[in-house]
Image 1 (spheres, rainbow, N blue to C red):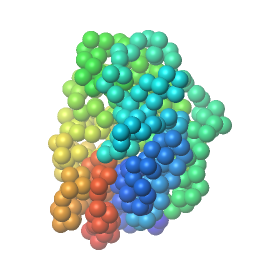
Image 2 (cartoon, rainbow, N blue to C red):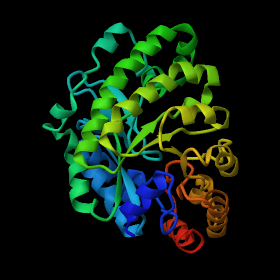
Image 3 (cartoon, helix red, strand yellow):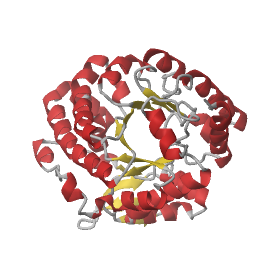
Length: 362
């Protein structure tokens, strides 16, 4: 059984030959593992985003894991250096828009002074480009490159973007976005609906380009009470899943932090798999498996603090714990409980793979 088959079966809730391993490899981690100049390479890839996914794919192949994630193509960013820091700069005005996040995912974090309250004009300005038109542009070129070069033996997950609270938080800031739930709920719904329509088209385009699964994410969903999640996230997730069903690819939902209070609602979204089982945030693998393991596949659970700063034995014990709790009956993929930390020792990723190969056999 090859990696693509292994992950596909597990993500659909089935029993493959062994538990697959699909760590969330972030571009900065790939840069370090592959030995490129760290900050210089990250900046170069923000200026020329077509290379970013290829770095992640090459890192995944070097590790021998079963799959990776690729992002919908992003426009090049104007990155400028200043006193050892790198900033995205508006090419027309010279204003700084955000700072490059070297310690996180390798993207650009909006500067606090650039945050502002959005209006209906901002909603109207969100472009909705059909999947057919997207496939004619360069937006899918990075995805197609990865599929052509690595897709024959690796499971490729497509990330078409997000459309719920995370998008608002990136622009207005986390505190303002959370307050908007109470102060401007109708605006939040209109904003989410518009982004949903755009993301559906990107998801369809990625599926038609040949990805094996689609990522659906909401970083801050765990902050919501069940009633808020049911109103502001659930119907939009359901619409996304329904729109992508004809594409025939599994969809998994990524929600950071504690989500145990939302498990029943997550099942109602219609997704095939839940990730990343953030044990640090309060989502024990054992509890999730017990409560919804027969309804959704599960992915994640390996402590990212141990991956970034713990011992090899701590990571080995994490893998043993996750496999013992979630592997029985199938429908489990071994992965970190969020993005693989940039500083993760490659030996720890090898331990994840070895654990799946020895303890995760069926």
